[in-house]
Image 1 (cartoon, rainbow, N blue to C red):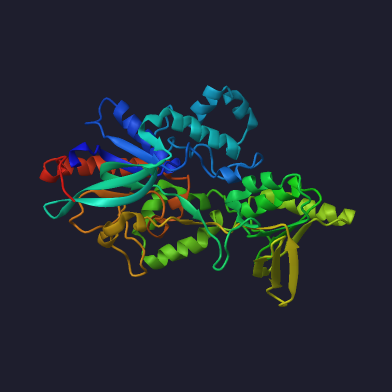
Image 2: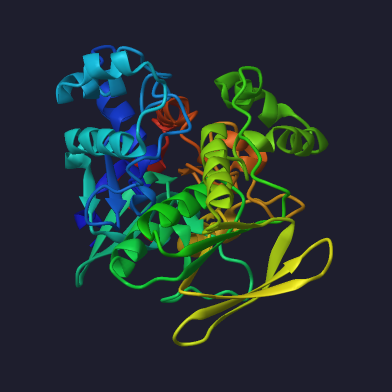
Length: 441
Protein backbone atom coordinates (compact mmCIF):
# COMPACT_ATOMS: atom_id res chain seq x y z
CA UNK A 1 0.00 0.00 0.00
CA UNK A 2 2.84 2.41 0.80
CA UNK A 3 4.03 2.36 -2.80
CA UNK A 4 0.57 3.41 -3.99
CA UNK A 5 0.30 6.51 -1.82
CA UNK A 6 1.23 9.64 -3.83
CA UNK A 7 4.15 11.50 -2.26
CA UNK A 8 4.30 15.31 -2.30
CA UNK A 9 6.90 17.74 -1.07
CA UNK A 10 4.03 19.81 0.35
CA UNK A 11 0.51 18.93 1.38
CA UNK A 12 -1.62 21.87 2.46
CA UNK A 13 -4.54 21.48 4.84
CA UNK A 14 -7.13 24.10 3.97
CA UNK A 15 -7.27 26.38 0.95
CA UNK A 16 -8.17 29.81 2.23
CA UNK A 17 -6.25 32.95 1.21
CA UNK A 18 -3.04 31.84 2.97
CA UNK A 19 -2.63 28.46 1.29
CA UNK A 20 -3.94 29.93 -1.95
CA UNK A 21 -1.07 32.43 -1.75
CA UNK A 22 1.32 29.53 -1.15
CA UNK A 23 -0.01 27.67 -4.19
CA UNK A 24 0.61 30.81 -6.25
CA UNK A 25 4.14 31.16 -4.84
CA UNK A 26 4.80 27.55 -5.87
CA UNK A 27 3.47 28.18 -9.37
CA UNK A 28 5.74 31.20 -9.74
CA UNK A 29 8.69 29.24 -8.34
CA UNK A 30 8.22 26.66 -11.10
CA UNK A 31 7.81 29.35 -13.74
CA UNK A 32 11.16 30.88 -12.76
CA UNK A 33 13.77 29.39 -15.07
CA UNK A 34 16.43 29.72 -12.35
CA UNK A 35 14.49 27.61 -9.82
CA UNK A 36 15.68 24.17 -8.85
CA UNK A 37 13.80 20.90 -9.07
CA UNK A 38 10.01 21.16 -8.98
CA UNK A 39 8.31 21.10 -5.60
CA UNK A 40 5.28 18.88 -5.79
CA UNK A 41 2.28 20.07 -3.81
CA UNK A 42 -1.39 19.41 -3.27
CA UNK A 43 -4.00 21.13 -1.10
CA UNK A 44 -7.11 19.73 0.55
CA UNK A 45 -10.14 21.94 1.21
CA UNK A 46 -13.38 20.82 2.83
CA UNK A 47 -15.53 23.48 1.14
CA UNK A 48 -16.96 22.53 -2.28
CA UNK A 49 -15.34 25.59 -3.86
CA UNK A 50 -13.22 28.53 -2.80
CA UNK A 51 -14.91 30.63 -0.13
CA UNK A 52 -13.75 33.28 2.33
CA UNK A 53 -16.07 34.56 5.09
CA UNK A 54 -19.05 34.27 2.76
CA UNK A 55 -21.48 34.98 5.60
CA UNK A 56 -20.06 38.49 6.02
CA UNK A 57 -19.75 39.53 2.36
CA UNK A 58 -21.96 42.56 2.88
CA UNK A 59 -22.19 44.33 -0.47
CA UNK A 60 -21.40 47.74 1.02
CA UNK A 61 -18.49 46.62 3.23
CA UNK A 62 -14.94 47.50 2.22
CA UNK A 63 -11.63 45.87 3.01
CA UNK A 64 -9.67 47.18 5.98
CA UNK A 65 -6.37 46.46 4.27
CA UNK A 66 -4.86 48.05 1.18
CA UNK A 67 -5.34 46.22 -2.13
CA UNK A 68 -1.53 46.28 -2.43
CA UNK A 69 -1.47 43.70 0.36
CA UNK A 70 -3.02 41.13 -1.93
CA UNK A 71 -1.90 37.54 -2.44
CA UNK A 72 1.39 38.42 -4.15
CA UNK A 73 2.43 42.07 -4.44
CA UNK A 74 4.50 42.37 -1.26
CA UNK A 75 6.45 39.29 -2.38
CA UNK A 76 6.44 39.78 -6.14
CA UNK A 77 5.17 43.15 -7.45
CA UNK A 78 5.34 41.88 -11.07
CA UNK A 79 3.09 38.88 -10.46
CA UNK A 80 0.27 38.10 -12.89
CA UNK A 81 -1.80 37.10 -9.82
CA UNK A 82 -2.00 40.65 -8.46
CA UNK A 83 -5.22 42.49 -7.70
CA UNK A 84 -4.34 45.04 -10.38
CA UNK A 85 -4.06 42.29 -12.98
CA UNK A 86 -7.41 40.94 -11.77
CA UNK A 87 -8.95 44.37 -12.33
CA UNK A 88 -7.46 44.47 -15.82
CA UNK A 89 -8.88 41.02 -16.57
CA UNK A 90 -12.31 42.12 -15.33
CA UNK A 91 -12.21 45.34 -17.36
CA UNK A 92 -12.34 47.62 -14.30
CA UNK A 93 -8.79 48.90 -13.96
CA UNK A 94 -9.53 52.46 -15.12
CA UNK A 95 -12.73 52.56 -13.07
CA UNK A 96 -10.88 51.48 -9.94
CA UNK A 97 -8.14 54.06 -10.47
CA UNK A 98 -10.76 56.78 -10.84
CA UNK A 99 -12.37 55.56 -7.62
CA UNK A 100 -9.28 56.87 -5.75
CA UNK A 101 -9.28 54.30 -2.96
CA UNK A 102 -6.90 51.78 -1.48
CA UNK A 103 -9.76 49.73 -0.04
CA UNK A 104 -11.88 47.66 -2.45
CA UNK A 105 -15.28 46.26 -1.67
CA UNK A 106 -15.08 43.04 0.30
CA UNK A 107 -17.16 41.20 -2.30
CA UNK A 108 -14.71 42.39 -4.96
CA UNK A 109 -11.72 41.08 -3.05
CA UNK A 110 -13.49 37.76 -2.63
CA UNK A 111 -14.00 37.64 -6.39
CA UNK A 112 -10.28 38.38 -6.79
CA UNK A 113 -9.45 35.43 -4.55
CA UNK A 114 -11.78 33.15 -6.51
CA UNK A 115 -10.25 34.39 -9.80
CA UNK A 116 -6.76 33.55 -8.52
CA UNK A 117 -7.87 30.20 -7.09
CA UNK A 118 -9.26 29.15 -10.46
CA UNK A 119 -5.81 29.64 -11.98
CA UNK A 120 -4.26 27.06 -9.63
CA UNK A 121 -7.19 24.68 -9.21
CA UNK A 122 -5.11 21.78 -10.52
CA UNK A 123 -3.33 21.57 -7.14
CA UNK A 124 -6.39 21.55 -4.88
CA UNK A 125 -9.06 18.98 -4.09
CA UNK A 126 -12.27 20.67 -2.94
CA UNK A 127 -14.83 18.80 -0.87
CA UNK A 128 -12.01 16.98 0.93
CA UNK A 129 -11.98 17.16 4.72
CA UNK A 130 -8.75 16.11 6.40
CA UNK A 131 -9.56 13.67 9.19
CA UNK A 132 -6.12 12.57 10.41
CA UNK A 133 -2.38 12.89 10.02
CA UNK A 134 -0.15 9.95 10.86
CA UNK A 135 3.64 9.77 11.01
CA UNK A 136 5.53 7.49 8.65
CA UNK A 137 8.59 6.10 10.38
CA UNK A 138 11.93 5.13 8.93
CA UNK A 139 14.73 4.09 11.23
CA UNK A 140 12.80 5.43 14.23
CA UNK A 141 12.48 8.92 12.72
CA UNK A 142 9.43 10.54 11.17
CA UNK A 143 10.24 10.70 7.47
CA UNK A 144 6.79 11.58 6.11
CA UNK A 145 3.26 12.50 7.11
CA UNK A 146 0.33 10.49 5.81
CA UNK A 147 -2.69 12.76 5.40
CA UNK A 148 -6.09 11.13 5.24
CA UNK A 149 -9.07 13.02 3.88
CA UNK A 150 -12.72 12.18 3.44
CA UNK A 151 -14.33 13.12 0.14
CA UNK A 152 -17.97 12.11 -0.06
CA UNK A 153 -18.08 8.53 1.12
CA UNK A 154 -14.51 7.76 0.18
CA UNK A 155 -11.20 8.18 1.98
CA UNK A 156 -8.07 9.30 0.18
CA UNK A 157 -4.51 9.42 1.42
CA UNK A 158 -1.57 11.61 0.48
CA UNK A 159 1.99 11.36 1.76
CA UNK A 160 3.81 14.59 2.55
CA UNK A 161 7.39 15.56 3.25
CA UNK A 162 6.07 18.85 4.62
CA UNK A 163 2.66 19.77 5.95
CA UNK A 164 1.30 23.34 5.81
CA UNK A 165 -1.66 23.86 8.12
CA UNK A 166 -3.95 26.65 6.98
CA UNK A 167 -7.03 25.62 8.92
CA UNK A 168 -8.24 29.18 9.41
CA UNK A 169 -10.27 30.64 12.25
CA UNK A 170 -13.23 29.36 14.20
CA UNK A 171 -16.15 31.52 15.39
CA UNK A 172 -15.79 32.35 19.07
CA UNK A 173 -18.84 32.24 21.32
CA UNK A 174 -18.72 33.00 25.08
CA UNK A 175 -18.71 30.09 27.51
CA UNK A 176 -22.18 28.72 28.05
CA UNK A 177 -23.58 30.01 24.76
CA UNK A 178 -24.72 27.48 22.19
CA UNK A 179 -25.51 28.54 18.65
CA UNK A 180 -28.99 27.78 17.36
CA UNK A 181 -31.83 29.07 15.23
CA UNK A 182 -32.13 32.33 17.20
CA UNK A 183 -28.63 32.62 18.68
CA UNK A 184 -25.82 32.82 16.16
CA UNK A 185 -22.36 34.12 15.40
CA UNK A 186 -21.98 36.96 12.93
CA UNK A 187 -20.18 34.60 10.51
CA UNK A 188 -23.66 33.32 9.60
CA UNK A 189 -25.12 36.79 9.08
CA UNK A 190 -26.10 36.77 5.41
CA UNK A 191 -27.48 33.23 5.52
CA UNK A 192 -29.63 34.09 8.53
CA UNK A 193 -30.81 37.41 7.13
CA UNK A 194 -31.97 35.65 3.97
CA UNK A 195 -34.01 33.18 6.00
CA UNK A 196 -35.57 36.02 8.04
CA UNK A 197 -36.33 38.29 5.10
CA UNK A 198 -40.07 38.91 4.87
CA UNK A 199 -40.67 37.95 8.50
CA UNK A 200 -42.24 40.43 10.96
CA UNK A 201 -38.99 40.81 12.90
CA UNK A 202 -39.33 43.21 15.83
CA UNK A 203 -35.97 43.27 17.59
CA UNK A 204 -32.37 42.12 17.22
CA UNK A 205 -29.63 42.19 19.84
CA UNK A 206 -26.04 42.51 18.61
CA UNK A 207 -23.26 41.77 21.10
CA UNK A 208 -19.76 43.06 20.39
CA UNK A 209 -17.77 46.26 19.86
CA UNK A 210 -15.65 45.55 16.79
CA UNK A 211 -15.97 46.13 13.05
CA UNK A 212 -18.18 43.08 12.52
CA UNK A 213 -20.56 44.10 15.31
CA UNK A 214 -20.97 47.57 13.81
CA UNK A 215 -21.49 46.11 10.32
CA UNK A 216 -24.11 43.69 11.65
CA UNK A 217 -25.98 46.48 13.42
CA UNK A 218 -25.97 48.64 10.29
CA UNK A 219 -27.14 45.81 8.03
CA UNK A 220 -29.97 44.69 10.31
CA UNK A 221 -31.05 48.32 10.68
CA UNK A 222 -31.22 48.57 6.88
CA UNK A 223 -32.78 45.19 6.10
CA UNK A 224 -35.52 45.27 8.74
CA UNK A 225 -36.94 48.83 8.74
CA UNK A 226 -39.60 48.00 11.33
CA UNK A 227 -37.28 46.25 13.77
CA UNK A 228 -35.31 47.62 16.70
CA UNK A 229 -31.57 46.92 16.74
CA UNK A 230 -29.93 46.89 20.19
CA UNK A 231 -26.14 47.08 20.25
CA UNK A 232 -24.59 45.80 23.49
CA UNK A 233 -20.94 46.41 24.38
CA UNK A 234 -18.81 47.07 27.43
CA UNK A 235 -17.18 50.20 26.04
CA UNK A 236 -18.61 53.71 26.17
CA UNK A 237 -18.86 53.66 22.41
CA UNK A 238 -17.34 52.10 19.32
CA UNK A 239 -13.60 52.78 19.22
CA UNK A 240 -12.01 53.83 15.91
CA UNK A 241 -9.47 51.56 14.29
CA UNK A 242 -5.94 52.94 14.39
CA UNK A 243 -4.84 52.89 10.75
CA UNK A 244 -2.33 55.72 11.09
CA UNK A 245 0.89 55.42 9.16
CA UNK A 246 3.21 54.76 12.08
CA UNK A 247 0.89 52.26 13.77
CA UNK A 248 0.53 50.36 10.50
CA UNK A 249 4.23 49.60 10.58
CA UNK A 250 3.45 46.77 12.96
CA UNK A 251 2.16 44.97 9.84
CA UNK A 252 5.43 45.44 7.92
CA UNK A 253 7.60 42.37 7.25
CA UNK A 254 10.28 43.97 9.44
CA UNK A 255 7.69 44.22 12.20
CA UNK A 256 7.43 40.44 12.25
CA UNK A 257 11.21 40.13 12.69
CA UNK A 258 11.19 42.62 15.54
CA UNK A 259 8.25 40.96 17.27
CA UNK A 260 9.70 37.46 16.92
CA UNK A 261 13.01 38.38 18.53
CA UNK A 262 11.43 40.44 21.34
CA UNK A 263 11.08 39.13 24.89
CA UNK A 264 7.68 37.94 26.07
CA UNK A 265 7.06 41.09 28.17
CA UNK A 266 7.82 43.27 25.13
CA UNK A 267 5.56 41.12 22.94
CA UNK A 268 2.72 41.57 25.44
CA UNK A 269 3.31 45.31 25.56
CA UNK A 270 3.30 45.63 21.77
CA UNK A 271 0.02 43.75 21.54
CA UNK A 272 -1.54 46.08 24.13
CA UNK A 273 -0.17 49.17 22.41
CA UNK A 274 -1.36 48.24 18.94
CA UNK A 275 -4.41 46.06 19.49
CA UNK A 276 -6.57 48.92 18.22
CA UNK A 277 -5.15 48.37 14.73
CA UNK A 278 -7.27 45.21 14.50
CA UNK A 279 -9.19 44.19 17.62
CA UNK A 280 -12.50 45.67 18.84
CA UNK A 281 -12.02 48.61 16.53
CA UNK A 282 -14.30 50.09 13.87
CA UNK A 283 -13.69 52.19 10.78
CA UNK A 284 -14.36 55.81 11.65
CA UNK A 285 -16.69 56.28 8.65
CA UNK A 286 -18.96 53.51 9.93
CA UNK A 287 -18.92 54.92 13.46
CA UNK A 288 -19.97 58.31 12.10
CA UNK A 289 -22.71 56.73 9.97
CA UNK A 290 -24.20 54.84 12.92
CA UNK A 291 -24.09 57.96 15.07
CA UNK A 292 -25.85 59.93 12.32
CA UNK A 293 -28.59 57.31 12.19
CA UNK A 294 -29.07 57.35 15.93
CA UNK A 295 -29.19 61.15 16.10
CA UNK A 296 -31.62 61.34 13.18
CA UNK A 297 -33.94 58.88 14.91
CA UNK A 298 -33.82 60.94 18.11
CA UNK A 299 -34.86 63.99 16.14
CA UNK A 300 -37.72 62.08 14.51
CA UNK A 301 -38.79 60.52 17.79
CA UNK A 302 -38.55 56.92 16.56
CA UNK A 303 -35.48 55.23 17.99
CA UNK A 304 -34.85 51.87 16.30
CA UNK A 305 -31.08 51.90 16.79
CA UNK A 306 -30.35 51.62 20.50
CA UNK A 307 -27.01 51.41 22.25
CA UNK A 308 -26.56 49.58 25.53
CA UNK A 309 -23.06 50.82 26.20
CA UNK A 310 -20.94 50.10 29.27
CA UNK A 311 -23.09 46.98 29.56
CA UNK A 312 -22.86 43.23 29.30
CA UNK A 313 -25.24 40.36 28.60
CA UNK A 314 -25.68 38.31 31.78
CA UNK A 315 -28.18 35.79 30.46
CA UNK A 316 -29.30 34.76 26.98
CA UNK A 317 -31.92 32.02 26.63
CA UNK A 318 -33.88 30.63 23.71
CA UNK A 319 -37.52 30.66 24.75
CA UNK A 320 -38.75 28.69 21.74
CA UNK A 321 -40.60 31.51 20.00
CA UNK A 322 -38.00 34.18 20.75
CA UNK A 323 -34.71 34.70 22.56
CA UNK A 324 -34.52 36.60 25.84
CA UNK A 325 -31.41 38.64 26.59
CA UNK A 326 -30.82 40.18 30.01
CA UNK A 327 -28.42 43.11 29.78
CA UNK A 328 -26.74 44.62 32.84
CA UNK A 329 -25.24 48.09 33.15
CA UNK A 330 -21.65 47.87 34.36
CA UNK A 331 -21.96 51.19 36.19
CA UNK A 332 -25.35 50.97 37.91
CA UNK A 333 -26.11 47.26 37.90
CA UNK A 334 -29.52 48.01 36.41
CA UNK A 335 -30.86 45.25 34.19
CA UNK A 336 -32.94 45.38 31.03
CA UNK A 337 -34.75 42.36 29.59
CA UNK A 338 -34.87 42.32 25.80
CA UNK A 339 -37.08 39.83 23.98
CA UNK A 340 -35.69 39.51 20.47
CA UNK A 341 -36.07 37.57 17.25
CA UNK A 342 -32.33 36.84 17.32
CA UNK A 343 -29.18 37.54 19.30
CA UNK A 344 -26.06 37.94 17.17
CA UNK A 345 -22.66 37.43 18.76
CA UNK A 346 -19.96 39.42 16.96
CA UNK A 347 -17.37 38.13 19.39
CA UNK A 348 -14.52 37.37 17.06
CA UNK A 349 -12.65 34.25 16.07
CA UNK A 350 -10.06 31.92 17.51
CA UNK A 351 -7.35 30.12 15.53
CA UNK A 352 -8.15 26.47 14.96
CA UNK A 353 -5.99 24.21 17.12
CA UNK A 354 -4.12 21.95 14.66
CA UNK A 355 -2.85 19.47 17.25
CA UNK A 356 -5.94 17.20 17.45
CA UNK A 357 -5.52 16.63 13.72
CA UNK A 358 -1.88 15.65 14.22
CA UNK A 359 -2.66 12.68 16.47
CA UNK A 360 0.49 11.18 17.97
CA UNK A 361 2.61 13.84 16.25
CA UNK A 362 1.21 16.39 18.69
CA UNK A 363 3.30 14.82 21.45
CA UNK A 364 6.45 15.60 19.47
CA UNK A 365 5.56 19.31 19.11
CA UNK A 366 7.21 21.55 21.69
CA UNK A 367 5.26 24.04 23.79
CA UNK A 368 6.18 27.04 25.89
CA UNK A 369 5.48 27.56 29.59
CA UNK A 370 1.93 28.69 28.79
CA UNK A 371 1.18 25.62 26.73
CA UNK A 372 1.39 27.39 23.37
CA UNK A 373 3.13 25.80 20.41
CA UNK A 374 6.73 26.85 19.90
CA UNK A 375 7.18 28.11 16.37
CA UNK A 376 10.39 28.84 14.47
CA UNK A 377 10.87 32.06 12.53
CA UNK A 378 10.04 30.22 9.28
CA UNK A 379 6.62 29.28 10.77
CA UNK A 380 7.63 25.67 11.47
CA UNK A 381 6.40 24.11 14.68
CA UNK A 382 9.39 23.26 16.85
CA UNK A 383 9.51 19.46 17.07
CA UNK A 384 11.72 16.66 18.30
CA UNK A 385 14.85 16.16 16.23
CA UNK A 386 13.40 12.88 15.05
CA UNK A 387 10.72 14.66 13.02
CA UNK A 388 12.47 15.32 9.72
CA UNK A 389 9.58 16.90 7.85
CA UNK A 390 8.29 20.40 8.47
CA UNK A 391 4.96 21.17 10.12
CA UNK A 392 4.21 24.76 9.09
CA UNK A 393 1.48 27.03 10.46
CA UNK A 394 -0.45 29.65 8.52
CA UNK A 395 -2.23 31.24 11.45
CA UNK A 396 -2.14 30.54 15.16
CA UNK A 397 1.27 32.21 15.51
CA UNK A 398 0.21 35.51 17.04
CA UNK A 399 2.14 34.76 20.23
CA UNK A 400 5.38 34.29 18.26
CA UNK A 401 5.03 36.37 15.09
CA UNK A 402 2.63 39.09 16.14
CA UNK A 403 -0.64 40.60 15.07
CA UNK A 404 -0.28 39.66 11.37
CA UNK A 405 -0.63 35.96 12.17
CA UNK A 406 -4.18 35.61 10.88
CA UNK A 407 -4.38 38.75 8.74
CA UNK A 408 -3.93 39.37 5.02
CA UNK A 409 -1.31 42.08 5.59
CA UNK A 410 1.71 39.79 5.58
CA UNK A 411 0.35 36.77 3.71
CA UNK A 412 2.38 37.23 0.53
CA UNK A 413 5.64 37.62 2.43
CA UNK A 414 4.87 34.78 4.84
CA UNK A 415 4.26 32.21 2.10
CA UNK A 416 7.50 33.27 0.44
CA UNK A 417 9.35 32.58 3.67
CA UNK A 418 7.65 29.20 4.09
CA UNK A 419 8.49 28.22 0.51
CA UNK A 420 12.12 29.29 0.92
CA UNK A 421 12.36 27.26 4.12
CA UNK A 422 11.01 24.17 2.33
CA UNK A 423 13.49 24.65 -0.54
CA UNK A 424 16.44 25.19 1.80
CA UNK A 425 15.56 22.23 4.00
CA UNK A 426 15.11 19.98 0.98
CA UNK A 427 18.56 20.87 -0.28
CA UNK A 428 20.07 20.25 3.14
CA UNK A 429 18.30 16.88 3.41
CA UNK A 430 18.86 15.72 -0.18
CA UNK A 431 21.48 13.18 0.83
CA UNK A 432 19.51 11.68 3.72
CA UNK A 433 18.36 8.10 3.08
CA UNK A 434 14.94 8.76 4.62
CA UNK A 435 14.14 11.02 1.67
CA UNK A 436 13.44 7.88 -0.33
CA UNK A 437 9.80 7.17 -1.15
CA UNK A 438 9.34 3.98 0.83
CA UNK A 439 8.61 3.89 4.53
CA UNK A 440 6.65 2.18 7.26
CA UNK A 441 4.43 3.50 9.98
